[in-house]
Length: 123
Image (tube, rainbow, N blue to C red):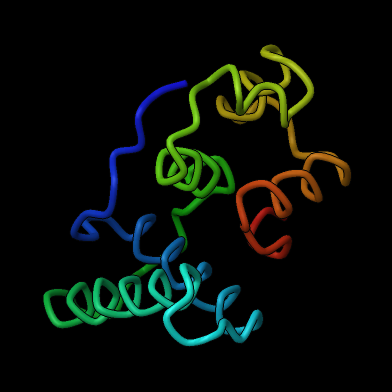
């Protein structure tokens, strides 16, 4: 398993949108104070605020589900083999990442459950 890159300053619209989606997910969980989820929520909020202070409104029309999956997998320290397992194999992962194949309902559910990406962002 590859080592997680750890938190970092948000640099791209993809990273920003993914962080906002993760904040929404964590808010829905209503984490207990001082829990790991609460700490992650606070950190992501600081990173999003910093990004917004440095950028004008973001045009996310070019974002793809593959961009979101790649970013969230990187944030969780997942390697290609682990992501392929979620997607149902290396060829399915490759086809999805290259834009040759849309996600199936099962893949969307698996990505939502394993990576925390809201299903509506994967459609």
